[in-house]
Image 1 (tube, rainbow, N blue to C red):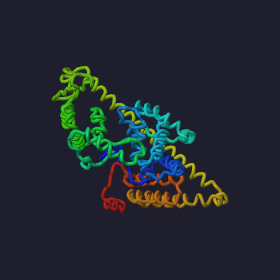
Image 2: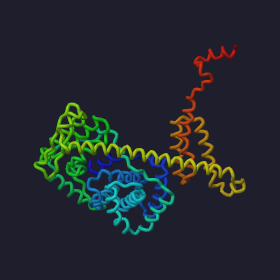
Image 3: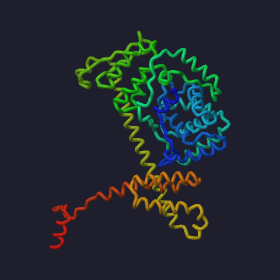
Length: 433
């Protein structure tokens, strides 16, 4: 397994069907239409679902980069071209990644560095005018970008192979020479030790970031074991104490690490065991640096809560806007005379038919059956090239309507507060009196 494959499994495993991207996502439907035009103009053969997976992987990857903005051509574009086996496809991916970040409401420091150093690579392209028009069109149409791109991790850590300890210098050279014999799209050659490449030489902050992608303790320990097993013998002694301490931290939550800088003596790490973490008496013995670490965790927690709240508000605003557009379209359709409807009959007829089917599904289908109908609709629409925003809005309202319908059925109406008749037989006797 190469570092490219491993990183994609951990950060954004992706979908196998393009309909999973298009469902309930105005952003992805907008990107899909523009990507179709770009893909056809540049004669790109890469499947659309693979391009979408790569775009979202790169958006997530930027947040995990501890060297933001550094050597984008080699580390990002060349690597993507190697993975997609197409230079043009890789350029297309980063054109759309660039457009997404240019319209993102709030950028982190790493994202700012990434965009600043990607600007010259994109704006020197022959497609510069088209890309600038794309950015302006996204703003004009108020296309919303998520405040945070959430990783889509590989579901099974057990399926990730274990790489045993070995010294990789000569193996890396051998692998590099083997790849040199093959025709390459860009000058990118994967290393033999994928974990060493992925963690930037076993960087402790990066190791902790990847381990904490998983919430389950067993998954975290399993991933840490794979990283530790891959560490070459010549480096293992340097990182052994860190691996041991991090494992204790994951298992018990009662270990605090004090990480020294790389330029300090022997690059050692001090691990402090405590019996009751959080009590003032225990914390009095710690250094100011440990207090700063605790404060940093608190700030990260508060920032995460804030981002979640902002994302919730953004989604609510999108839903309100889409519902308003839908209601406006319905009123306009009712007010249009029959003569004008005949002029646009060919274009509107599919939407009218879908509206009738959607109403039937909302009334009679379960949530599971409705999801199967929605998937069938998107596949047939893509097959026949008939995908418009009005029809998508109708389809996107099916699941919320079914959830509202089922919730309504569970409501109890009590006519008399003083008497609640659960048994229907008692109610009938009272009616007879």
